[in-house]
Length: 87
Image (cartoon, rainbow, N blue to C red; front, side):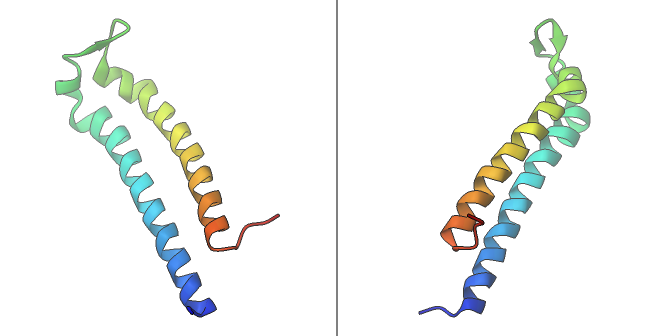
């Protein structure tokens, strides 16, 4: 049976893994789509606007809000899994 310390290490490992993945997605959407790949994305239009411009102006904001909700759901699930949730 794993000790409490081992359980908390596993919890924090999964917590940091979640943070890393979400930050990576945020970086790709905001910096990648808004700056690095803007020329390629500008060849595609979304609602009459170039897709690179859309990502730089609005898409990264939408992605950030979605990532907040994903983080909340994921952390609530992790808290229940490791029995550290607040009831």
